[in-house]
Structures are given as structure tokens and as C-alpha cells.
Amino acid sequence: MGELKEFKLAVRLFLKAYRWRRIDPVPWTPLKRAVKHSRISLVSSAGFVPPDQPVFDESKKGGDSSFRWIPDSIKVKSLIQTHRSEAFDHKGGEQDPNLVFPIDRIREMHEAGEIGEVNHRHLSFMGSITAPGPLISQTAPEAADLLIEDGVEIALLVPV
Amino acid sequence: MCNQTVSLISAEFEKKGITTVVIQLLREAAVAVRPPRALWVPFRHGYPLNEPDQSLKQKRVIREALSLLELKDVNPPVLREYSHSADS
Image (spheres, rainbow over the protein chains, first blue to last red):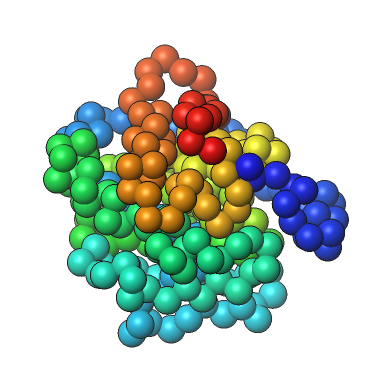
């Protein structure tokens, strides 16, 4: 179970003292049409990058708020996990990247008629962002604009 | 911090007109940050879709998350607990 006690003491102390960024008011976009007719894109915070793209900058104070595009056509096994956090067990995602970035599962559900369309690209972020100002003001809205240009209607976001 | 990161991204997407659902591993973070729609799963960090190489279990999590998109007459934020506790 995802609980504070699974973390090392230093991480637990940090999280105990950390002031979470509260979303208020909570924005809400109603579903326009059924999931089985909607176009989906995935967002993962596992820090995956394709082999031809630069890795995330773990030295950046407050975290690297940039994102990488992941083509839907990619073989998930080719993705490189650049997340270096020791706060979670990396073995599962290394064994099967679909555990944290389920591109194959989404394709299968589309083929089964459960999801309307799969966008031609997905988004990868580095989740270790302690100072999320640039994420909120710049990179997340930029990513949203580009997904809207793609015709994306729904997004599934997966932490690690 | 991953739980907060995906929640904040989801809020920005909702503002732009994309309907979102986030998976959450840490209930404390979900309650504090308040993403619009969240499925809290009983799995440890690093395993948000349950187990590696278990496509049926992974799709069960995804299916339940996506079902939150189709809820009507709810007051945001929506935080639901994963119902397949036998999977954990």
C-alpha cells in the first residue's frame, strides 16, 4: 500500500513537513462523449525518455518541470527510466514499463473497443518536483495546449 | 512528489478543457492536493498499476480509473478507492 511508512526516514520527515500545493478552486471539465468514443493521451511522472531525447535534469533545484513527448508507436521496452529517486522501488517499472506507463494496455483497450482513439503521442514528466510553480504556470498549460491541438479529450495520469 | 505532480498537471489540463483522471498512491497527498478526479490504489510506490507483466490486473486499474470520467452529478474533487482489494 502507498503509505508514508514505506519511505526511508529522511523522506518521511520531508513529506511530513512539506506543504502540499492545494488545488482551489478545483477545475472541472465534464466528459463530452463516452470514453469508448474519446481520444486519450497518457501522462506519466516516471521520468521515461525515448533513446533519442535528452534526460531530465535531476540537479535542477525544485525539480525539472520540463516534459518529453513519447510517440504512441514506441516500443515501451525501449524507454529509458531516468528517475533516480530512492523513494520508490524501480524494479517493477524496469521489468515492465507498462506498470508505470501503460501504453500497450491502452492500445489493447482501444482494440477491444473500450477507448475511442489513442493519441499519436503521450507525455512524460519527472515527478520529483518540490517547487511546482513553473509546472503550473508554464509547462503543464503548454502541454495541454498541444494535446488540445491533437484533439485529445481525456487523459490518464499515472504517478510512480 | 509524483502524486502531487500528476494532480497539478491534471488541474491545468482541466482548465484547458481536457477531462482527466489521476491515479494516486498516497492518500494523504490526494486529500491535501485535491485533483479533480482521483483513484486511490492500495499499491506501493513504483507499482501504480499493481504488478509487472500482469496485463489483466493492469487493465483492471485503468478501467476503474477511466470509469470515474463517466460519473455524473458529482461534486469535485472526486476521490475513490480502488475496489478490487483482492488484487493487492
